[in-house]
Amino acid sequence: MRPLTSLLLLLLVVAGTAQSASSVDLSISATTHPAACDIRLENGGHVDYGVLQRSDLNADSSRETLLPARNLGWSISCGYAVPVGLQWTDNHAAYGSLPVGTQYFSMGKDGRGAPIGSLEILYGDATVADGQTVSAISRQTGGTTWIPNLTGIVDNRFVLAFAAPGTGTLGAFASYSGQLLLSTRIAPLDTLDQTRVIQLDASATVEIIYL
Amino acid sequence: MTIPDPRRKLLPVSLLLLLLGCSPHLLASDCEITLSSQHLDYGPQQHPSGAVTPQARHLLDRREVRLNANCLADSAIELSLHGPVQSNRMKFSDQGQVSIQMSRAQLDGRPVGLARLSDLGATGVGLESLASAPGDIIVPVEGGLPARGKSLVLSLEIVPELPLSDMRSRDAKTHEGQLRIDVSAT
Image (tube, rainbow over all chains, first blue to last red; front, side, top):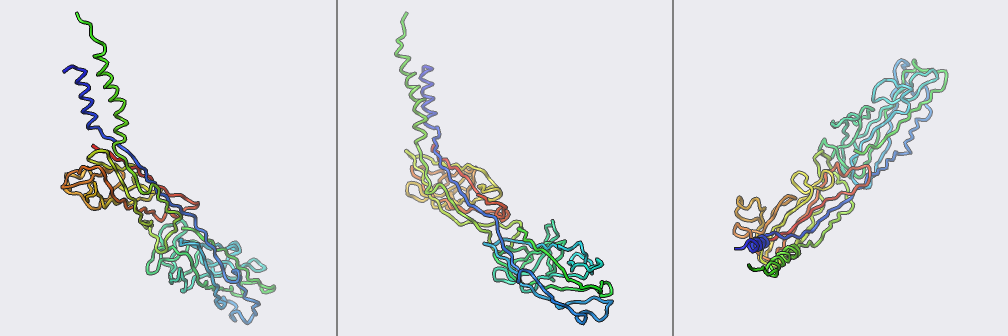
């Protein structure tokens, strides 16, 4: 066989076994949007104890007075399910509280600069998320591990959230609602300036944290 | 002494050029592949309600796409899948995946099994339903061997999934996945 003919046959053989190809592309897309939740506090978040008389306070002036607890309704509404945490900031932390502690919010200071007392904030048992009762969980600010918060107490070292029903696991919900329990203490009168009106003046901000 | 006729060399060279020039065009049109839909847009997705664990994932709807591969002549048809991979499956968004299940394969109207080319010797027979991913070469199978035919049709069941963490972004986000399917015939 002549060389040129051999080359031609080789090409024919190669052509006969060569692979041919055609292609098609498939693309898949979806979109997500950031969550946007609104939080509302009953009465605009304003709690007024009115005017307290001396007789409303502990007769033993060396002991603190625990005022009757107040409830304050709250709700969070998100367009769709999203896990959120709640973190409270004491706007009057600089005035101090009595007792002192990370769960005690300031009630302001008297004319001599002494702390008037303290406010504790607790999430009640009846928190409902998407129609189901949920329980509070907390994790340290910046932490990753959630632990049960059996009393629902607010502590400024922690972020508070709500677990999926029947679990201790963070839940995502579209709506949340419940009652805050406000526990207010007034420092022993002996520690306060009784020559002037004592103005209870607590201020706190709650922030939604998208988890 | 004889003088060679130049036409005797020109003829084979012309044939050779003809082959080289025409073969690619002919080969490329040997098979064609089409999908009933080339773009699946799932639109806005909402974070599901309930427990949020680090491993939790959101499954998007199951969608079906029909694949049709037609070749000019009886051939052993191969489907090659190409694209980014995440945990051995088609990649979707940053950390998500797409499950691709091939099924209901018919070659020239008769039901056939499906197998990865690399598994042919091991499995012996094709499967009615086969999970596949980029990197796979899928062939129709009859009697444990690649089947020959002109027209292969099958269904792709597509189920994308996203980790919940991918769904909680500070900005609007588009999640995308790309797959290319080549058909070839030998």
